[in-house]
Amino acid sequence: MGIQIDLDKCVGCGDCVPVCPFGLLEVMDNKVQLKEGCTLCGACQEACDYEAILIETLSETEASSDRHRGIWVFAEQRDGRLKSVAYELLAKGRELADSLKTELSAVCFGHSIDEINQLIAYGADKVYLVDSPDFADNSEDLCTHQLVELIRQNEPEVVIAGATSLGRSFIPRVASIIETGLTADCTGLEIDVEKRLLLQTLPTFGGNIMATIICQAKRPQMSTVRQRVFKKGVPDERRKGQIIRVDFDKECITSRTKLLGFVEDITETIKLDEADIIISGGRGLGKPENFRLLEDLAKAMGAALGSSRPPVDEGWVPYSHQVGQTGRTVCPKLYIACGISGSVQHVVGMQTSETIVAINDDPNAPIFEIATYGIVGDLFKVVPMLIGKLKNE
Image (cartoon, rainbow, N blue to C red; front, side, top):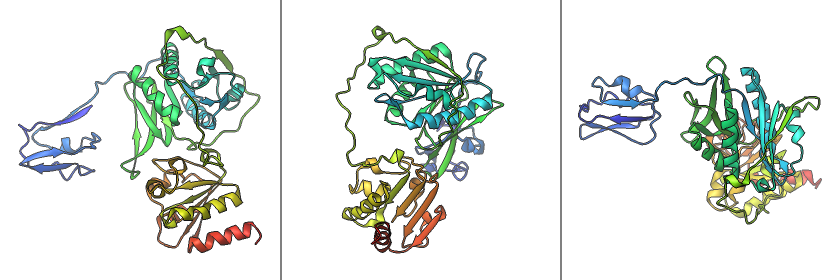
């Protein structure tokens, strides 16, 4: 799909300029010019009386067929243990599958994986399992090849995966090979039951707009979803399901890459993705040395250390601690925001926290709009008081 402006037909009247919701049109030298970022909403085309604006659309094809059925969740593992995002996606996948009255399947690649039966307990009806030493290190080439083969053989209707480093790298390759659409970094998934369309929500335009994306003409519909967006379901150990062991033919493909080693971030004493309590700092801390104050609070509370984007951009803390639209999405039981104003970009990454405590000396800071509890005060006085109370000083 795309948009074109026929300069031979355009008279430079400017009628289309004010109707563009994003202000992407302007008249220059008596001709309309289009800036980057067009969403193909069609408002300008309707406003043009000279038929100078053309929007190419996909040919209307059958959105799906009877052979495309089933919701698939890619259950990622590392070192033989399933990642928590697999269980989060199974909870949402179960909901989607029930809405469509279809099966929910998990797909897992690895070697000597623990807890495979837990995929069934958390909602899967089937588990497609590839257990091979070749998949122990999550080779992207091998994962791409194997998932493409499984999709072609079984023709699922929807495939969702975590927006992890692995998911972000190989799932787009899968979508490209099978020539279907992919919406990356989603923060919400719903189903239009009547049309059997996956409604994929993600923040766009710097988090100022929540866009809903559909894949109308291709199957499967594919999405990657941020971690901690959905909550785990409650496992039912009595659930019955089928584990389908899939043979891997190593001769069919050669991996072009080799994992030399995996380096853990030693600055993460407690991982953000798994933390029940997160202490985050923002620009209000003033300088990198002041993050030590938050480190002391985090240590006293057994919490992980987070950050908004400005301190990361300034080099005060590593990127792995960033929470927000361009960082990590978290959902702890307690999130304490210190000196964070509360921009939309940051809020997107932590707004689903169960309890949010904001400490800021600006009573009008946007963070207070979503905070469960707000403390208007100097963080350099409030945080030491909290630390002293926790240490009974």
